Amino acid sequence: MHNCLFHGELAEGPQERASIPIRPGDTNTELANPKKSGDDSDSDIEGVVNYRRAVNARTLPPWNTLEGDETSQIPNADGKFQGPWEKWAIWWDQKTNTSHWEFRKPFYPCSHEGTCEQAQCRCFRDNITCEKSCGCSLSCIRRFPGCSCAQDKKTRPCQTNCPCRQLLRECDPDLCGNCGAAEILDPINRHNEDVLWGRCRNVALQRGVPKKTLLGHSEVHGFGLYTGEAVKRGDLLGEYKGEIITRAESQRRSIVYGHQQTMYLFDLNLEQEIDSTHFGNKTRFINNSSTTSANCSAENRFCNTVHRLGLFAKKNMKAGTELFFNY
Image (cartoon, rainbow, N blue to C red; front, side):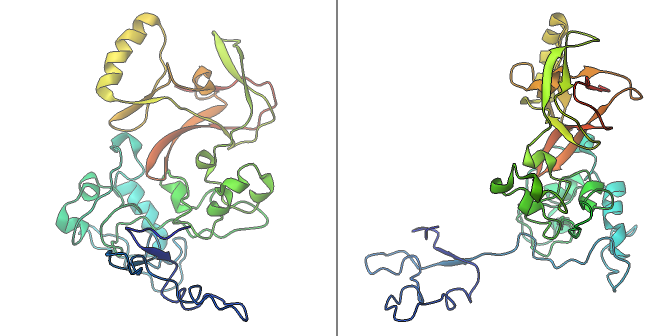
């Protein structure tokens, strides 16, 4: 909203400064020619103008297309990229750790000169994609580009063939420009159900509006969690929250919890776990069940460079149904 004294003015592009509309008769020339930060006569700071840029500067064709001549982006056995774009997500899923949270460490962006392979950066060593916060080249071929799913008035996109979903991550409003993730995640629209239809279905954890649930005595053991309203398959029942602790701390606490006969530890990634014993929510009271009788499942999603755990319904349920998932 305001120009920063130290970092300068922020503009959409070089043309913005010259295209500011002026009302007839307006003598305020500062609107048409705004001063750069540091232009004041009493300032000894150099004037700077910062222009907005796309998070991912690469112009990418749709991942699920078979048309066009996009045949240079799928790595072969030698690590060189070739093949149609539809196989891009499949390759990263099968050949790397990108979608395998159990093998991934907490994400830290790389920052270096040259290519990731030349720099042997963290992303390259961990065998994962680069993200929007990485400081490598904007043309880095390892950068995750987001999806190109189109909005549809008949149904909600990003359900099956979405590359974000294929790589077990939620759509990113900074990267996925066509699916409607940005509109859904706008805080103004958080509780507006009308905005959802025809737009991205893969942003539930980031939106943070789970279905209503009620805590009560379980028919199986101790306390249990029940649905407080009708639930459809795929709906978010809640996010499993708690303290983010290391594996070593988890091993220490598990000894204590074993004596207390209580355990609320949940694997998050290779080096971290979630402990909701002291800081958590109602989802920790969902009881264990076999895979065949479970009516919800825990899914690890990569959201905005962070791993998060969500409980999702596996089938349609009426209000008052007790929730179970396979630990």
